[in-house]
Length: 162
Image (cartoon, rainbow, N blue to C red; front, side):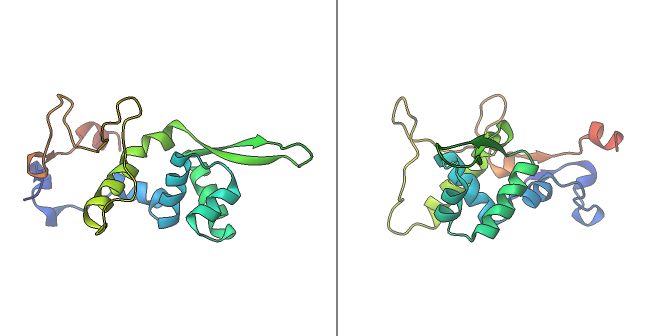
């Protein structure tokens, strides 16, 4: 089953997904290295060398992707200076970067379910209770929503402003 496409969206041949939010997001975080750098930021990595080493990319790749994540507002650079050393920068999550967390956790959850044959290597649990954490699709009313229960409709307010 698929989502229900409403009105002019029902005929998939009659329209193109221009201005697609998924495509725009992937322009920023659509590479393996970008997603893994964000993973590391969630784990608490802040220093350039730590990112490059833990993700297993060259310094050039790490620099390019970190610069992109900063330019787009997911991370910000903050200066730090160790005694006797020059000033350097560390990378910290912004609110926009924190808001990407459900995407990363959904990929993690999917990977645990479909890509781990020998059991999951890490568990996601709530700090205060130890209860498992998982990503779900829920309506604003709190109901769990399956793919076939999702409707996609044109946001006329957005199209009127274009």
